[in-house]
Length: 198
Image (cartoon, rainbow, N blue to C red):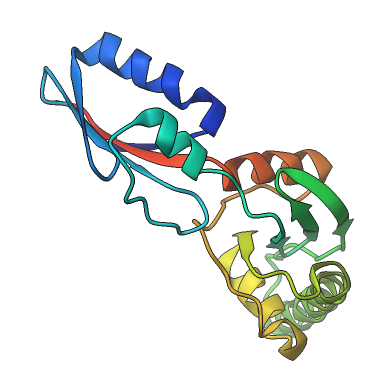
């Protein structure tokens, strides 16, 4: 079993490739399909939406359309990326890095001192991410998040971000930079397809 992210514009080609590899494929309601060799797939819409339309790949692709206004927040210990998005276009964004010291092999008091320093550096990085998230995201109705779960959780503890509704799959990303943010935007708008090969 494997999961793949497929942008809406590539759904028809993905289904054609699945059918070519596994044989004639019958679509079912959710959108799911069973191929002649017994392999199956189940597609999920982005943004935690449910699909109750016809078993038709084009209709499913149209249902993948992103919201008019939504946000993206990526946080790791040493960096962050925040974007306000209109459809598939970034309206405003900010990426940033903060130095967070790595672990040390020193023992005793040195190790405790380095651990405190790391915690303080991480706290400053999370506060910076939170400040930019408040400024850029404002009152977006939906938010997709990614990075490191503990780091995202820490940033979302900020009371002024409490009204944001987190949707979609958690995106696992490397240290957020502009290119990572752009890739995450594409992933957030993609259908997730779970494939079980026989």
